[in-house]
Amino acid sequence: QVQLVESGGGLVQAGGSLRLSCTTSGLSFSNYAMGWFRQAPGKEREFVLGIRWSGVSTDAKDSVKGRFTISRDNAKNTVYLQMNNLKPDDTAVYYCAATSERVSYPDYTRGERYGYWGRGTQVTVSS
Image (cartoon, rainbow, N blue to C red):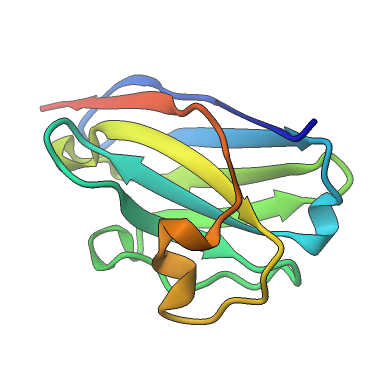
């Protein structure tokens, strides 16, 4: 059974940092590309940033460029999202997702290309 479990969310003031983790089980992690998505209240889910099975990051959503970075630790079956200089607009539930496809832009930004999803972790940024 495949599981993706996010952690590391919480309440932080604007300008602060958080590191989200997504630990997977039940899949051959090193063969999967991983993506982070988020969904704010009343808004559609949106792609944030991804990382290919090779460890190369995808392009990021414009609003997080220069602030968010992604990394993976294949030995721990875990992908991380480091979020710095957080803004109130970053408030959302953050989800990690996994795909075995070798997707390129724009496909890696599309949620339907990911076969496995976590349940999400809430990030709230206060002003």
